Length: 257
Length: 259
Image (cartoon, rainbow over all chains, first blue to last red):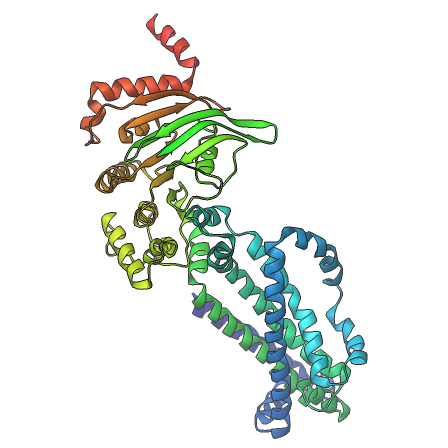
């Protein structure tokens, strides 16, 4: 069943590629504005052995990984604290509800003013934007822990900290993991956006800006393709990790269905 | 062992327990039966220290329950929520033993022994969601057994399993608890069950709950699902408990039937 789903996805992507290729061949659109899919793919393949592009990829992925780590380090404890202390959660709730809907890209100009170091700037916007799903999932994950599960352990004489560590955290962990996966997608968007807006010396966003400056739409799209593929790949890896670590969670929700 | 005097509890202005007094002696299995929603679970949660009653006194082993006592265990009706799905059966049973200061190996041994007693010797490596409802409730019972509590509280422990499994579990609890000489307070709304498993049956009134009767069950120590239920004493007790649980309305019905 899973294979069928993967196959359908491949068919969809291939169909899209063929359609773009057909548009190029038909001459409906000037190839300078929309290169043929085959040109983009050849360009993308060429980029793998381009040391300059590889250095850009390393810079982007480093910022992404560090940003995501920082996000987890900041948002998970914050979310758990707010989830465990309803009074504190109610106090910061309006602030969260106000800040969260602000498009994160809109804070990049502010970050440009605040940070002189390019990596610091990227990390700041990544952490700001990616923290929300982790924070929200940690709060709700912790708050929705089954009271009977907690009472069970309390009944055996375990104190509040033990109940938190042995029941609340494991119960909330799958939700937090989902939040981290969503955050990883947001982090890649923010990394490239920061590179596009703030400039700098290295990064996929910088490569795209330079390709645009050289009027190389094919290379722009080839680099974009790699950024997109990376997003798909990191999501797939995190889904696999979740399925493995939280088999009990998925087995239960599938049984309930 | 357990001494409850004039226990009162209200949720806001809604009074649930209205002066409940009862006692459980060492090694006794006392069933508490009453109509649905009469406050049975509130009573159990008060004894367990999970809620603080509005008034009255609970003495456990001579000491007042003012926080959660560390020598009792609870088996809840809802095993699927009470067992931890991220742990195997053996680890679920072993977890509370941390409170006993046992090292990892001793915890594991005690857990396996308890699982063996409930007939799950081979299921220690299974996760709760890989088991049937009856098996899961056996794991809950094993968890309580392994803890060796001085008082075992059971809240409708057989309420969520099918009839056959229910009988099996009743006999399992009777057997294992006789073996360990455990003291048990079992809450149920099932009249038959209260008589079948109990050394004594305490009947609660409709909410707000008071004790309406405290009946000795003279059926001997060993019980049999078929033979015991045929005894005159069983039939008599069941009828008496039934009348008490239904309150005044039954008397009217009986009168009508006689005509």
